[in-house]
Length: 285
Image (cartoon, rainbow, N blue to C red; front, side):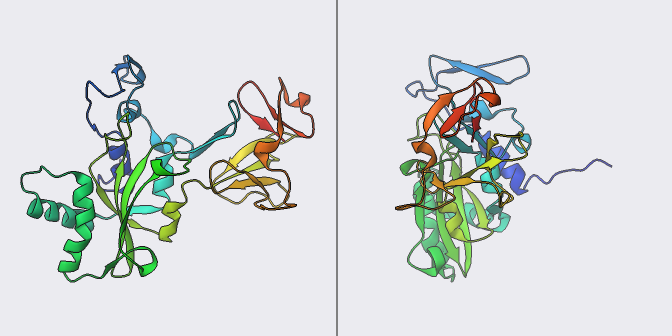
């Protein structure tokens, strides 16, 4: 018997948001998209393209959660599909309540989504719920990942709130070209763990994978599980400084971005004391 995936599963909701048509405008920088015979995006004429156009037809589940490349520096990218799936879970009940709220306060549908999102917590309070910010303190808040250090593949915008002791977000994904517009309709999700994990979008870990080659080791990016204890690693919390074995400060060791770079053709050309990079952008330690 064939397996039918629920359309309100977290995976389906996130995939739908990533491919949601967030519109076009002749003054934006997206241009005119071009697709091949299979419907795959192949580029854009007179513009840079839009994320929702690029995402059409992609198999997000089959793509790596994180990629690292050293071709133009230290480039680490967490795919928002996997990053979000590991942290949040679609909440159909809260989504229904948000839609009810929108119909009550904006029957003409002429208010911006962000305005509605930021008005929602007070409506919940009027319904008798305790609504706060992170860890039960303060008020709900809005976050846009474009406004700080970031390793995500696309910009996220969300309202974070805690209701009756549980953490939730109203999430938008930027699907346009220019970051000022082109956001998806908000969807409601429950935060599965510590709400602060949603604020750690600039965190990453790179380690020397002893299984990738013999010696030297090829640098790989660590998501899960934790790298072998014998493996040297570098960690970041700001998407730029890569601290040796996660340590910073005086005497902590050379940070990865501080190594001199050496272009090599094969792993045998590796030389100690350098960040060695081959033509494909793989790094070797």
